[in-house]
Every structure is written in structure tokens, then in C-alpha cells.
Image (cartoon, rainbow, N blue to C red):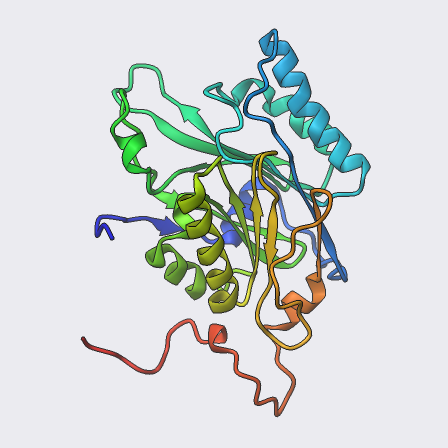
Length: 283
């Protein structure tokens, strides 16, 4: 494990204020929230850039029409294209109060000697960026090399704290420990096409994060692999990973948020509620 992963996790409330003034009264927490993991065929070759952009917008519009609250595209779905040109139309298609994740794609500032792997997240009607904090060895060996981002933003959505991660980041204990301190309740993993070993690492780590964070972990994969939902291993939750026949997951939203408020006198083991354990271990 590399020891040079340095990043800060931004306060979700600060991001919310950047997108606009918070409402004077918090809305009621819904019983459930639906996540659409967009199916994207990496082998598809559009005739024009306009055709490609139109499909991205159409996927978001279809998800919104079907009642999805959160829409997640897989990592690298752009196949090397910049995402900047579709942002305005995607925001219009998403409508109000919807969270949209456009999975990491190459980004390079003019004149820069390095690239970034950048995801765009629509939250509160405004776009935020997440530059991959831990590029893979292959990305760091590219020309120009992909440079690590310096911050991992969090988002407020329907009363919960949400994190968005590319698949490589879900494997990192350092990142998981920081998410635990901030009591993240939903992790959206934008995954690329993986070989068998990469898929196994992603699946095992996603399940572990759901347990240790007390969070729902949604893995949004390309069309070649089924998406998955991992829920906390607590009473009242489905304990096996879920892979729906379609691409939509119905998250028990209120139940997830209620984990942070255990019933008085409950003796149920909830280690994720202690972000700073009282014990110290030295090896």
C-alpha cells in the first residue's frame, strides 16, 4: 500500500452553501431513494460527438422520467472525451433536486504538463468536480501522467452525507478511515470495465465499506457487468449484495439515516458509530 495518499475531505455543508442558500426548514426524510446505475457499452462508437452527447443527456432524462433520484455513470464511460461540453444540457435534463455523477474522464488544463481524472457531480443544481485522489499505476505512467487530486468533496442529499469514489479509491483503507470520521451514509462507486481480479477486489472492498461505515455502497458498472448494492450488516437490512434485473436500486433511505440514532437501551453492535475509537493499538 502506498503511503503517499494525501487528501482532505471537504465539509458537506460548505459545498451545499456554495451551491446556494440552504432552505430554512429541512424537508422530511423519504422512506426510500432510487439510484440508477447507467448501463454504458464501452464498445459503442458514435458517428459524431453530437450523437455521443445526445445519448448522455437522454440517459439522464430517461432516469429522471422513471423517477430515479440519483444517476451514476461508470468510470471512463466517455472513452477519452471531455465531459465539459454536456454539463449544461445534463443539468437541464436532470431537473431540480437530483444527484448526477458523470464518472471520471480525462481532463487537462491548457498548458499543463499533467492530466487529471475528473468526475463531475451535479448537486443542488450546481456542478462540483472530483479529481481522482489516487490514480492507478497505469494512469501515472501515461503521457502526460495523471496527477492525484487534492480533495474529496462530500455532498448533502436528502438528509444524508454522500461520497463519490472511483473504484480504485474504494480499495484504500486511508480513504475509508476518513469517510468514517465524517459518518458518510452513502458511497457511490463509479466503476470501469475490470478483469476478474479487479472485479473481485472491488466487490470485496465495497462489501467491507458497507459494514465498517454503516453505509449503503452502490457500484455502478459498465453494461458488461451487473451493478451491485451493499447494505450495512445490521438488523432489518438485506444482508446479501443485491444485483437487480434492471439498473435501479431502491435504497431504504430512512432506515439508513436512522442507524445514526439507535434506540435507547439498544445493545446492537454498531462499531461504525464511533469514528474515533477509544482504544489505541500499536504493532
